[in-house]
Image (cartoon, rainbow, N blue to C red; front, side, top):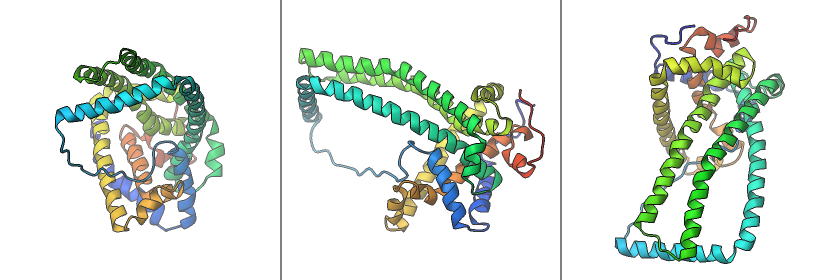
Length: 324
């Protein structure tokens, strides 16, 4: 296996990915297939945000900077006093809500892990199946779920100190009745930057797990860590290429956002209503979902035929690829 193959491009997979989406969804058009793949996509994207777009309208500010700061201090002072007077029930409620959020997150991660392999199965084999990939890739999905749980726990351990720091600053200012001035705001900005620096590598690890580790597990079987051991040498030898890949993903995301806004406007906002309906939104978004899933698969295949899930799908009798 060549860890540094020539000719790897972030733009070359665009056309094949569009052709793959066209083949799966429109050649021929099958509504039942759309709903089957849409259900897999719905599971794979559970908890990752709504399907609709957000719009920010501009506002005109007519007050001076000093007046704005006074209003901010007034609002924060009221919030501070309210929290201070109601800590007796706010803290227990926050603990209960935190436990509920953790439980729901664990369930969503489990369903996402199942859905990731179900969607990949449908895209790789050009099929609209639910039950078969649900059962077939249960061991791999369980391993992916455990890995994502560990990654999520590590994220919480690393990020919670920053949250605790911000809460401590707020409570300390509340006890001392100190106003929110520029120095305090800058301190919050510094804490936020530290939070961002910790979160960014974890976010990239999550993205690479979903886009590259899952296909490797699909091809080779084994655990999530086994797949990461295969991917690590490639990342190490092609760090610049994968940085460019991440940046190009941002560009693709911006283009997709504008296309969705155009779709909503052209349908007189009816499309926007459909996009925010659970499951239905996933079905409507299938062209985008399959394009994005195919794009990452085709990009990965540039690093060697042993990473080509479409080749494996066209040759179901081929021998398993040996683990690294």
